[in-house]
Length: 507
Image (cartoon, rainbow, N blue to C red):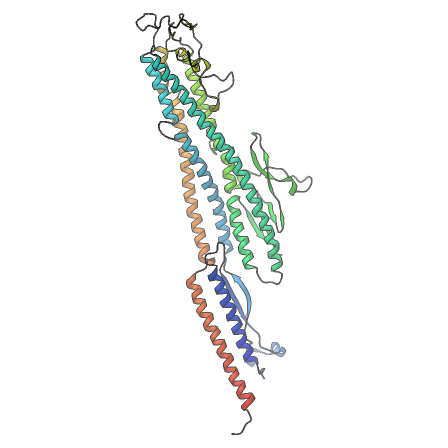
């Protein structure tokens, strides 16, 4: 015979289950806009019939179960979509960071038309042409010197900005390394909390949400792989399998100087045992991924396959060296123009061959940061007269004098601008084209990865995100179930009223 109060216990379990369902639904609705929150679902199972003997009886005996129990509070989450999202997040963060850096480099190389390298170069050679038209005119020579100063300033400005950006990228590497260490430390602490919270077999859903949000963030900084062991301990790896996090243990990333004196990521020695070969070894940039790899590539990239800031600095240095060499090779074959002042020691017939227009570097290769006019041309008093426009000795500053020289050197210097064998204009164009092509590819990859990341996120959200329409449906369902279970208890109470107070009474 069934227990007298078993019906009430069945109704009670239904009420408790419905109350739990309402609580879960309310929790989902309350966190509809919470970043990283995963929709939860109540999973129940039927209780076995009361009485120990029931387990030995066949189903044909018709023993009724004892209601419902909460089996687990589950998360609606797809681990495959999580991995896909984090993989796309790593690539997107890398390309968007790279695009931002290259955009700034492009703005330096292009800039405003009047202040760009192309504009400065054209102005300089236009001034050579003007001097060729009036080699004795002090005003034209003054303009030429000013244009020379201007192109030196423009190139040095671009060089300075690039070197500053190089330092900024080094600072960004240091910042991202710090963020990685902070996130991995937080993951390790959550691992420990989750492990202890789940010792009773029930998942710590809200703690797992926090950890998953940190894994999402970490995947933007660096490429990661992760797995959960049979004991429920999370292991996060990078750099070809080396462990970042192993449950509550963390291997920190540090910084070390490379051959160029730049700070690059390495495995910090204090997180490895004595003699461990991983200690103080640089991370493999090809395996790094994420924002960290983008900053590192921008900071160290020198090849055409992986052009970074040093690559474009090298192009700028090559341009400066070509400008200095090609102009000086012609200019120092010419003769200066005497100014006719008795106080000028060079008033006498000029024998000034060998005067450089630009500083030659003192025997060392010129860099864009070193570019300046030679001391002879930069001299505020006599510098304009040291501009060598003539291929013949100039013995008189009078343009009517047959010994006033010619304009052949100035003409030859102007013709450099269009000389394809020297390619001064081509070097500027190739730099601009190089950065434009590189940036264009980076923008395309950024746009592609953004689409893939958005698609992965939408798929993941469609499963794990909270839908208010679904939660409203669940709310109504649990509300009706609660009312139904309450009605069961009421019916059982009425039946017991008859059994206890009225049964056996003779009317």
